[in-house]
Image 1 (cartoon, rainbow, N blue to C red):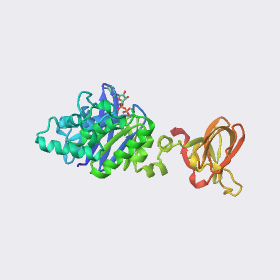
Image 2: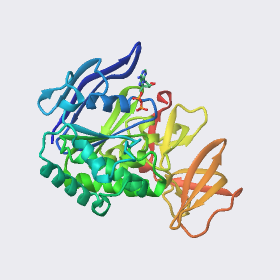
Image 3: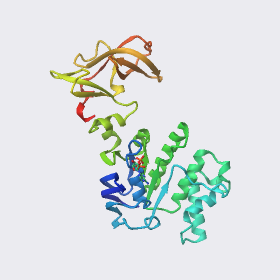
Length: 340
Ligand code: ADP
C-alpha cells in the first residue's frame, strides 16, 4: 500500500499540454476517481503514474520515493485496462499467473496467490477454463485477478467497464468497490462516467482541459460544485441551468440575464399551492415524460430553454400540457453567466 503524490505534474505532446501542472495527494488506501470529458487528460495522468508515459515536468512520488525515472515494473503498481488483455489460448489460471511472470516467487506461493484471487473474485470453479467459456464480467475479473496476484502498492484502472453492457457495468462497480473495501489497496480509477465516479470514489477529481477543477467527496461535489462545469457534470440527470437575473432577494429566469440559475431536477418539483411562496417558479410546456415508478421526470420547454423537473404524485402530466414547477430558494445554485 502506498500514498501517491502528484506535484505540478505536466505532460506535453510536442506543443500540446495535455496535463497542465496538476497537484494531488492520494492517501494510503484511498479510492480516487478521475472524471471528466474525453480528452481532458485523465488517461495521460494515469499513464504517467503507471510509468507508461514520460513525465514532462513536475514530480511523482509513490510512498516516499520520487519515481519519475522508474520503469513501470519498478513501481509496484498494477493496471487494469478497458480492453482487458486476456489470452484465449490460456486457461484462467494461466492468465492470472501471467501477472506474475517476472516475479521470483516460488511456484507454491504463486499457486497460493492465484487460488486466493480466484476465491475473492468468485473464479475458483473456473480456473481451468479458457476465456471463451467465460462471460464478459468473468473475463473482467480475470484481468483484475492478474493485477491482484502481484499484491501491488496501488491499482490503476483505465475505464475498465466501458466495454460492458449497462447491467454488468453496475454489477462490476459494486464488485470493484467491495474488492477495494476488502483489500484496502490505494486505487486510482479513470472514467468519463460520473455515475461510476459518484458510486465508487472516496474522492473525485474533476478534470477539464488538462487541469483539475475540483477535488472532493461525491457529496461535496454534488452539494457544492465550484463552477458550472462541475455542477453540470456531477449528478444525474444533470443540473438544470437557466439564464436569469437577481430580483430583490430572489431570482427570475431572464434570457439576457447575467447569472446562471442552477437547480437539480430532484429539487424542481411539481408546484403545489402549499409550497413556499418565495420559491423559484417556472412554467413551461411538457415535451416528454419519463415515469420512473415513485416519480416521473418531466421535460419542459420554457421559452426555448430545456428543463427537467420531477413529479412525485401518481398523475403523469400529458405531453403538450402546461406544467408549473417550483424549487425552494435554498436549493438554488447561482453562477456568473460569463464563466460558462
Ligand atoms: P482522456 O483520458 O481524458 O480522454 P487523454 O489523457 O487520453 O484524455 O488525452 C489528453 C489530451 O492529450 C488529448 O487532447 C489527446 O488528444 C492528447 N494526447 C493523448 N495521447 C497523445 C499522444 N500520444 N500524442 C499526442 N497527443 C496525445
